[in-house]
Image (cartoon, rainbow, N blue to C red):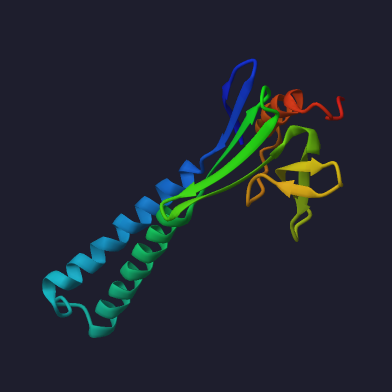
Length: 167
């Protein structure tokens, strides 16, 4: 998540995985090439076997479907904080729809980068809210290795929390 907009009374953090969307677009377009060739020729090209024709068609279809799924399913997460109203609202949006939830700032005690360790022992982190009951609520659905890039958003959000641990 990155600081998208900040004023004295409002803070907007946004996580838009543009690299995944670009990969999805590339896979979808690259998948269309062998599909278009197969539809144009309606049969294997001279010099290729029927098996090669169907393998290319299957690979093209797989690329198109995987790319389309990335384009449709990758979510943009927006976290809007309103100091005046004392609220935090999280919205997740993709091509298929929007969902969201909200809470009062007073119910959040801290914001942390929660580590998750892979099989190789390396840590990945994701921004997580800590509620006054101790419940941990992730703001993103995935973890990232970019701790330094996430720290400005963590610090900015902490400044908006009335009960945050300062330090």
